Length: 241
Image (cartoon, rainbow, N blue to C red; front, side, top):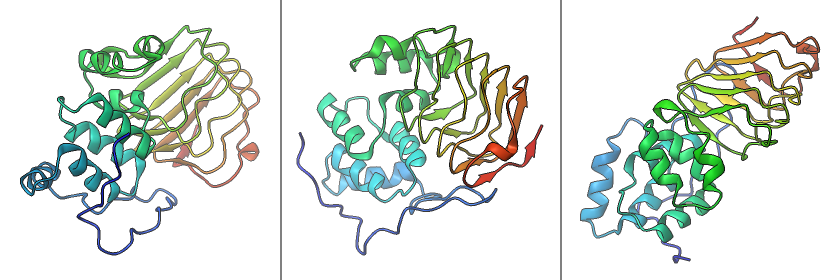
């Protein structure tokens, strides 16, 4: 375990975790709009190790999805496994989330081979490094807090009952089809930048979970039990078809 490092960028306490509302643009962290590459290099020139520089930047980014995207963009390939695992643990990032940000299947596969349970996650990486789960009768739940990038396809998984609390999708849609055990989309589901959610031919699907935020269209087809009235908590949908 690497020792905790003070954040050289932090003065006052960080702002509280943002709350997304309606179809407003997703929240942006302190460094959004800045040149993160330049910032990272400047921290290295100031004498920080790569691990320390990454911690300093990620601590100031308030939204977990953007933390994942920043880490994927800035992480040097020479970063040690110990430092990488410490970063993932500290900021609650699943290795699969990071692998999906590369948008490169070969790189994603090389990255996942560094971790346990890699065989299961490796088979979920499709063309272009996107999430592609097809005909998997073993999967029952996805890891909580996954951050997807690129269109994600989950089809013909008869025992999949839970897509994982806090599922987030950046710049993409989520397509779920013929997953008979799925009754609800997960609590805290969030899509950014016109991210559509499509649920097709899921016979037990009845609604969405608590606090769903969909910045795009929710399309439901062939789900006879689905009723908007059965959804719980705050729900923002531009169009329900």
